[in-house]
Every structure is written in structure tokens, then in C-alpha cells.
Length: 301
Length: 301
Image 1: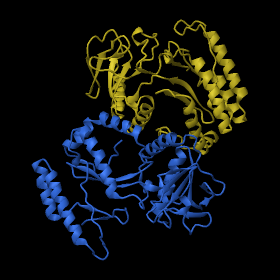
Image 2: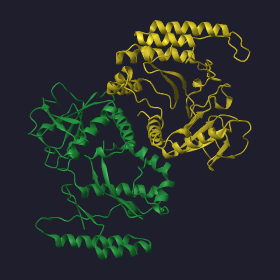
Image 3: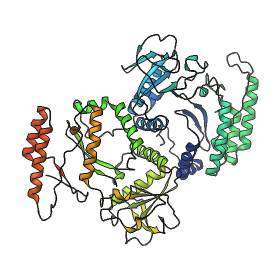
């Protein structure tokens, strides 16, 4: 299931990768058993950093966009995965409502919405776009760069359900990360499936909490593979009261970064990696930082 | 999910195809609901004839081979489909035993087996090849044209299970169509999943019965699409006592063919198609015939 990246390494396969390839049947079975106990998120995108000897996620988005960037080869896989998910959640589903970001009329975001609609249509659902933005008061057709159009319609709320005019969905898909808080119109919907649930929004979820939970999983997965879980887990720390625009408390950030890189070195078992990391600490590079609530992601230079 | 065929039509889309494309969400939902009531075969291959205005299956194989011909793009789809099927049948599965055809050492058949093993490995199962052929008395390595090898091992039977030396599978996959009858070694296995079940073998299953059942399904599907089910159903007839090698009873076959083509014409609603069919009747072409038990499939000239 690994997409072929243009920048794929052509050198010899390193130890971690070889171990993952060799353990493929065990890994897939592990996931199969995990999914029996835990419902996976309906969709997500994960930013991954791969240093060769270590590979770890640095950001997990539960409201992923950029679906328009799927290659033609990946599209059928997305459709098949959607079918499998819908079959589990609500096999009799007919109508699905996608709730996009408010105010975002960026052509690439609109292409993302059109692609989501396409995927759901191919998976057997009538998918329409219901905006909860105050500026969408009537059905609004917007043009895409490729000449297609998407239709944003205002969401209508009844006592227990939401929908569009003449469109009653059984499932609501959020493509809006709720970073501004949970809008009242989405609360107390007990008759419809809401994916992901409201508490997955950035107004509730914290990255620091996510990485704590991820570390527990990484430890168990590391045991399965017989590796130190640090090889698949990003060390992290939480710095509070920062203000990037005003430069407030950046000294605190610098201290946390230093402490973190020192922990990295201590964690590194083999000498070659330790040397490489010390080199990095000097240059303070490849370190990723972002806001704990997912907003305004930034990269260190 | 439609593979892109090299011989894809480039002309305008005809009415049937357009109706299928337009009904995609309804069709996919229909399948989703059907799979809730009926367990689909674990795997199958279907020969399809497409005349443009009509498209129908002419042969359904429940022990499909030629997996080595999957394109690189289709392989991940096969893996994903396998994962979904295994998750439903036996999520805790670890080992799977593939039972190949006896005596078949054709390089392309062996490549087919290697590909099946690869698909299962990627889907999270240790898959090994267990032969029930009397000529495999010890583990036998056979070379493939690409330099790889496959290992055929003799199947061992205990009172209630089958397996290999040091290999106890929970699932058995038949890639052997049992046209010579059900071997005793596969009977009364109540502790293991046997896919497909023994009564799917050609020693039990009849094509004529298959097409009767398919016609019922085609009628319901035709209603959904608002089309005459004849557009997706092959008219068929059963001729008994034929002997192709000796030419016995071929007169009977010719009569049946003639009667069948007359029925085709009667079924055709629009004039253009009726004309085309009359033309074909004159040449007696495009008619497909085969043995009712699936053996020695042949095509009419």
C-alpha cells in the first residue's frame, strides 16, 4: 500500500525499513486486531519525517484536505477504503453531507471538495456540500481551475438533524477542523453519524495529548517489531505562553529545544546516529514545531 | 474500480454504459445491501462479453488463476480487498494454506501461485502452498521464469485439520477447482475455514444452475437501473449428451443455438440491435459454449 514517491531512496534499504518489510504479515495482523478493539478515525493525514534510521509522525490531521492531489493510481484505493468504512458505519447510507471550511474559496481547497464528492459518489453515496458559513445564504456555484464547478448550499437545521433543502443525509463528514470552536448548529445531533466526532476538533484536541497517546501505541508496536519505540516516535515537549509574532517567550522555546535534542542524543543507541544528531544540535535543524491546537503550523529554519 | 483496458473504446458512450455510470451511487449501495444478506465468494473471475449495447457474463470461475497478470496498479486493490475479506471471515488469522491444482507445473500457473502468496503476505497472512497431489511427497522447490521459486509442500491430515509440517493454518484457500471430485483429505474439516466451500467445486456446481440464479439477480438489478435485464444477462440453453471429440449429438447443439438466437432477436427491443443480431445469426458467431461442469471450455468459431 506504499505510494511510490518521486523522491524514493535508491540506496540500500536501512535496518528499520528492512525490519518493517520483513514483519509485514505480523504488522498487518496487529492492525487487524487493533481495529477490532478501537474504531480508527474515518480519515486522516499524517506528516511524517524520515531521517533514514528513524521515521516518525509529527502531525496528524483528522480533517484532511488536499484530496485533489491523489494520483490516478491512488484514487481507486481511496474509493475502496471508503466503501469498507461506510459498510461498517452505516451500510444502508444513501446521502452524505460534507461540511467544508468556512470562508475558504481557495481554488485548491475547492478542488479538494470536488475530489471528496467524487470519491463518495464512486463509493456509492450522494455527497453534497453544506456550508455552515454565514456568507452562504443560498446555493452558490463556484468555479474550479479545471472548469468544473462545486455547489455550496446552506445547511438547514431542524430540531434533531441537519441537511440541505430536499436532502436528508444520514452521515455528516466534517472537513472543517473546528479550530474556532464548535458551532451550535452541529451540537446535539443524535440521529445522524457525525465524522469525525466534535471532540476531534482542534478546539478540544491537543497535539501534546495526541503524542502521549501515540507513545503508548508506539511502545506496543515497538515490542512487536523488537525495536526501541523511539525509532518511530517523535520526542516532544510542550512550551507554553509563546508568541511568534511578538517574539514573546522564545527563550523558553530555545531552552526546550535544547533539552529535547539532548534527550534525543541520550536515546540514540548507536554511535553513528549519535554523532549525526550532535551535528544537528549544533545547527538546530530538522526540528518541527507547531501550535498545540494545530493552528498556524510552522517549521523551524 | 474499472481497470483501464488497452482496448478501451474511444467512441461515444452508449446508452447502457451511460446509465450504469449515472447510477453509480445507487449501484454501489445496492451491492452494499446485498452483501449484508449474502456472503460473496472469497474470490472469482468472470468472463464478460461486451457487444456495446449489451454486456453479460458468460463464465464465472470460483477458483480463479492468472493472478500474475494483475498490473502494478491493481495489486494494491487486490491486497486491500483481501484485507477487508479476511477482517470479516477471521480477523485473528495468521496462517493461510493455499491448495493449488494437482500436477500443474506450468510456469504461468506457478507464477499465479507466487502472486497469490504475495497478495496474502501484504494483507498480513503467512501463506504457504500445500499440495494434495500424490506426486508431492516432500517439500519441492519449483523455479519461476523470473528466477523466483515457489515451494510446494505435502498436505498433512490430522483427525480434524489439515496443514503442513510445523504450519497450522486457520484458513484454507482452494485454487483447485475440484473438477475430478472432492478428495477425501478435504472432507470433514469443521475447525478450519475452507474457501470457497467444497460444493463450489465443478464436481457439484453446474453452469446452467448458475445462470438460473444469475438471472434472478439480473432481474432485480435491471429493475434498479430501469433496464430490461436481458441487457446484462446471457440467454442460455442446456444441451445434453454432446461429445465434441466424436461429434456426437452436435445436431442437437445446432438446434439449440438456432433457437437461442431466435430468442435473442425476439428479446431485442430496438430495431438497430435486432438488425445486427439477425446478421449474426446468419454467421453463427460470438456464441459461447462450454461444458456445464466448467471443464474444457471452448468457443464457437
